[in-house]
Length: 493
Image (cartoon, rainbow, N blue to C red):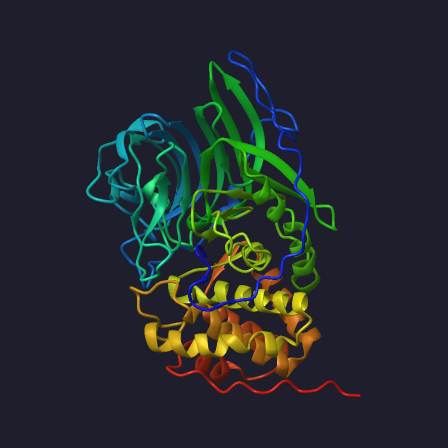
């Protein structure tokens, strides 16, 4: 999650030194009137397997005004044009969707700054209205039928209010800088600030995104970079995301980016997108591959086909799927925080919450992994490294309530991080390292590519361990006070 709670508790940052790369490495800029390609060469977007994106959308219990369970979006094809000097974004969104029920109209989320000019459904012009953040398409649909909805829209985009009292952010969605750059971070919602979308995490979809902008700017998005071309001073990048993603996990960034890369121990390429002239930032990103190696030892192979990190003019961080979005704050660029965001590719992205009441499913495990990573860097026992979490958990419970029943105006408080992180460590003490990580992996394998709730998680851990754990989970997730933390048992001689 963006911001990562740096203000809530001080955590040691132990970063090993690493040299940066050549500032011109991997740069592929072409002149006016010419065409260039990505390192892999130009290629067409693969035809998506839409069945892979079938979801069971729900009405969110905490934020019901965003998203609509009547829509199951399967694929978004977004053609975006950003004019930096005019601060104007225009787009054509082609959305393949499944109607989940008979209805007289479709509803999507679209920010009030983005004004639709034309809407077609299955090739026919259809009437629409756009009151506030709702795009209402007046056309009858039948349950289980698939449709192609095309929306043309444009405007001067800006962020939308976030339901939080965090000090490091108060808005969510798209941000435009004074220099005409833009970037997006949107948890629990805010994708609707820049494209028409069913903006609730239970509805996962596939994405193809093209971004055209004025050179030397270029666009970055989720997934694989298929092609880069520059014609008459305007650069277009085309991106393909081949794994279903919740809308809050999508991202775009536009700026004067240079590209570099590294490689993990298992051979995964990690792409770095860094604003030109920031080599020290690049040296920090180069630590990412070894964090992937560490996570893979515990959670299994990296779950997607690509991984990138893009640096933006932000003070926060966000685990957008396959493309980690990082601000320039020194804490955000620390190795443990980069590890935390990458760990979300397993917990949060591969398996996402179906309802925002269960954001702790993402944040608790990744905060636990961050604590364990810092413990390894410092050569400390796990419980000793996590000791600072206890005070943070108690304070955040008093401030924002239980992690699974939090104050809805305090999204992203420390309660969803530190309390469930301690819970996972308690379970690890009971089960032992090997069984704990085996069940953590089998949970991902069983639910890969889906959105889930706490009941499924409770059942999985009980079935896998043979233990009755419901009261244990409830005491940590919905209890008003922090349960007792047990001491670490010494290893047998």
